[in-house]
Each structure stands twice: as structure tokens, then as C-alpha cells.
Length: 168
Image 1 (cartoon, helix red, strand yellow):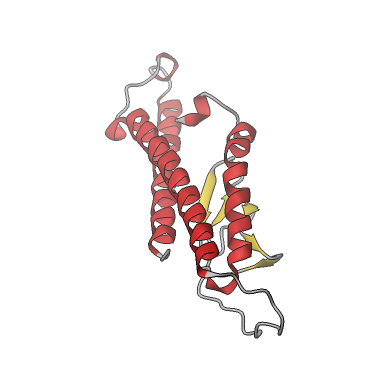
Image 2 (cartoon, rainbow, N blue to C red):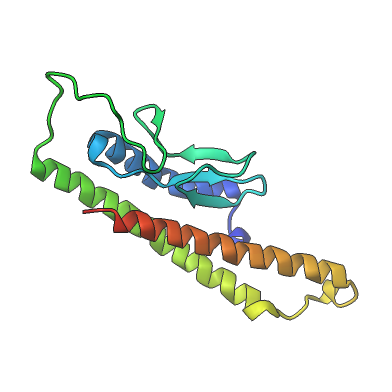
């Protein structure tokens, strides 16, 4: 699990550049871009990638496009203004390639995190730590936290794969 090596703030910094690039590419792509997968931070500092409204109390890290939050399946009904600059196909392909690369990088990171979380979870029966051998509740709490971590990373991988599937 990555939490052993860095704080939630450091994890956020590590992903911030990728998400800034993704947000920039998405804002430049305009209406041709599918609904984004938004990145949120829950109360416990876990990162979630969702394309629907999150649980109450989660902090949005990124997903705004042009200052307006786009919801899954929503399309702008405002027509393109006259004189609005058009993007040629080669430029758009380049932007899509950058977006695909960012999403693939995030997917690779999440895949590593899920592998680490599953290894630590140990198929639901990790060996108890010395301080947990005399305190069953402490062991149960750690087991629940590990299970939650595995589930979180599985959801993140699924959301990123769905987003990648929508790319042309």
C-alpha cells in the first residue's frame, strides 16, 4: 500500500501534474470529450475516481472542464458561437493521445496500488501483528481497513478503464 511511503498530500502532489494535463486536454477538447472521471478525496484521505455524484463530505480534486462541472451523460445544449476557433483533426488526435497517456499512467499507478493492497490484505486473512494478538478488535479494525483499501482501488481501476473505453 502506498500509504507506507508517503502522506496523502505527497500522493496528491504526485498525481497533480497528470490531472492538470488531463484537465487542460479535456477543456481544450470541448464537447467532443466524453464525461470526465472526477477525482475526489474522502474524509479518510483515500482517492476515488468516479463519474457520478460522490458521497457527502468528499473533496473534489479535479474534473472541472471550462469552469463548469460536467455530469455523466450530460451535453451542453448551447450552440457553438460564430467565430469559435476550430481544432484540426491532427491537433485533436494529439490531445486525445495525451489524454489516453495520462489515463493509462493513472491506471498503471492504480494497478500497482491494488496489487500492493491485495498482498497486504492476504486473501482476507493476513497474519496478526504482535500488538493484535492480544487485541482481537484491533485486528478486526485493520482487516476492515485493508478490505476497504482493496475495494477502493478496484473501483478506481474500473472507473479508469471505463473512461479509457470511451476514447476514440
